[in-house]
Length: 232
Image (cartoon, rainbow, N blue to C red; front, side, top):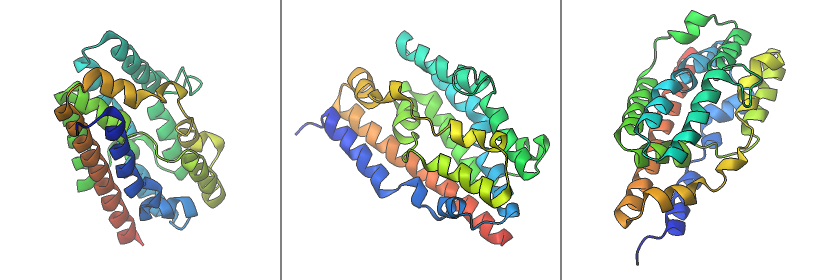
C-alpha cells in the first residue's frame, strides 16, 4: 500500500510521541527547578546554538525555496526572528535570548561566544546542511521535526525560572514568546506533503528527516545535560 499523506503525518506524530523533549532529563530539571544557577547559565550558553544562529538555518531555507508563497511565509519567520515586530513588540529574538542570559548574569560576549560542546556543534552543522540541501528536507526538519511539541511547556519554564532565580518578565520573554501557538501553521504538514512530496520516496524521505532531526536534537540535549552534571 502506498504511503499516503495522512500515514506519513501519523508516522511523524509517532516519532514525536516516542521522544517528547519535555521528558528529557535536561528539560525535566529545568521545568522542576532542580538545577543551580551555574548549571542554568551553562544551559543558556549551549542552547544558544539554536536561537543565536537561526539566520544560518532560516536564511538558507529562504534562499533555496522554489515557491513564492512558501518563500513569503519563510520570509515572515526570518523577519520576526530579526526584528520581533510581529509577535515580540519589536525586540529581535536573538535579543530576547540575550536578555535571558543577562537575567542570569551573563554578558553579551559570554552568550555569543561560548565554547560550544560537541552536541551544539553537531546540531549546527546538521541543521545548516539540511536547510541548504533541498527545500523538502529543510522545511521538514524545521516545521515537522522542530515544532514545539508541548504547548504551555515554555510558559511553565518561564514561571519556574522566575520563582527559582527571581528573573524579571523581560528575562523570560524569550520563552513566553516562543510558547505562542501559530494558528497559521496548523495545516503545515498537509500542505508541505501535498505540494512538495508527491511521491512515496519523497514521503519516506520526510520521515527519515524527522527521525534524524529529532535524534540530533536529543544528542544536543544529552550533551548539554552531561555538561550540567559535570558542574554539579
